[in-house]
Length: 559
Image (cartoon, rainbow, N blue to C red; front, side):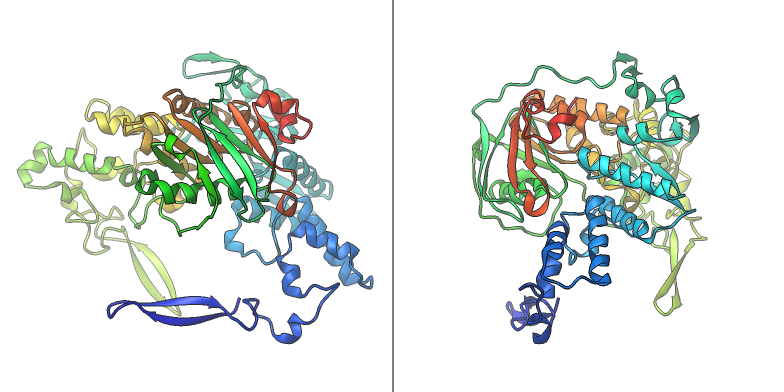
C-alpha cells in the first residue's frame, strides 16, 4: 500500500509522523490505468480484497473468456477453500495469519503441485479449525497419501488420532517426566495401551491424579441463566451484520462458529475494546494498539473486574522467562540473599539478577555474545566468562540445598514445586497453579520467545489465579485456551475454569473443542459460514438445546 507521510509537531520536545492513505490511489498503490481496468466491473484491487470464497464464485460466473489461466486460478482458489481458507482475502498480509492458517496455505500449494514420494510433517494443523473443517482437512491429507506421499502429524485432536494409520504415543508425562515412547502401532491396539494418557479418553476410561474417571466428564445439568447479561447492540466490526448479542453472566459461555464466522470480531475486536474503554484499569490485559468501537454495551455494572487471557506473547526483555513474568523470581532472589553464605559475603538480592549487579559484564547477562559478521549478519557465541549462564562466578557460588541460581532456572515447574514447598509458601502456590493449568513441564528460566501462544495464555491464567484474590463478579475471557493441550490437560483446565464460575464469576470462551463447548452452560454460535457468509448469530442456548437445533452446525458435534 502506498502511504503518504506528514510530520506533526506536538510541542517543542516531540515530533510524530502520521501515516495517511494516498489520496490519489486511495491506498491501493495502483496507477490510474490499473484502477480503470476492470473485469465485470471490478478492478484488481477490489478482486484481491474479496474473500477467497467470493472471489471463486465471481470468477466462475464472470463474463470472461475461458482460458488456461482462468482455469488455473479457479483450481487454486478451490483448493484454498477446501483447506479452510475461504474466509481470507488474497491481499491479507502473511504476518497476520495464524500458525494453522499458514500450514494450510502451504498444504494447498503442495496439493496443487501434485507431488509424490514426499514426507510432509504437520504440527497441529487443526488449530483454529471447526469440527466440520477438520473433516475436510483429513480428507485432503488422505489425498496426499493416496498420491504416494507420507504424512506425519503431531496432533492432540481426537478425529485425527482415530483416522491415523499408525500411532506413536510419547510420555508418560511432559518435560523431564516425558521423552519415552509409550506406544507404537495401529489404532485398535493403541486403545488397549494401559500406560498411555491418551488412549483411555478414546475408550472413555480415564484414570489419573488418583481419581477414577470415565473419559471426559460431560455435564448434564447447566447453571441457570439469570437476568444479569451483557447486552451488545449494533456490532458491525469486520463481517458482523449489526447484530445484537446477549452474553449471560454468572455462567460459562462458549462462542462457537466456523473459521471466519465472526467469533474474534465479536469478542476480541468488539467486546474487549469496549470493556477496556469503560473499565480502564479494571480491565487486565496485555497492552495492545487501541481499537475503537462504536457499539452500545449494557450490563457493565454487573462486572467489577475483567481479565483478558489471550495468546499474545509474555515478557518484554531478552532475559524474560516464566519465573520473571509470574513474579516468583524476585522472591527466589531474596531467598538466596537471606542465605548464610550470601549474608557473610554481603550480597544483596541484586547479586542474583542478570540485569543487575550479578550479571556477567562481558555478555551483559545474556549468556551469549553477538558478533557482527558483516553485511548485517550476526552470530551468537556462548560467553566464555560465564559459561553461558549470564551470571558472575560469585553469584553461582551461593547455593540453596546444593542448587545455585542457574540450577533453579533449569528446573521444571514440577521439580520446583517439590523444591520450594517447604521454603516459601507464595512461590509454591504460584508453581502449584502453573502445574494445575498443565504447565508443569516448562522450565522456570525458559526464554519467552520459545513459549507458544497457548502456553502464554495458561501462564497468564495461573498468574491471576495464584494471587489468591479471586473475588466475585469478575469476567474472564479466553481465546481458544485448549490450543496445544492433551486430553488430560484439557480436563484439568476445564476444572479450573469451572472453579472460577463457582466462585461467582463469569467466563467467556472462544473455542472449537467439542468437549469444552459441551461443558459450557450456554453457547453463542456464529455463522453460518465464514467471511461474508458469517457475521450472524445462528443459534444460542445450552449444549443440549443446540444439539436439537437444526440451525446449529456445532450442535451435531457436541458430546
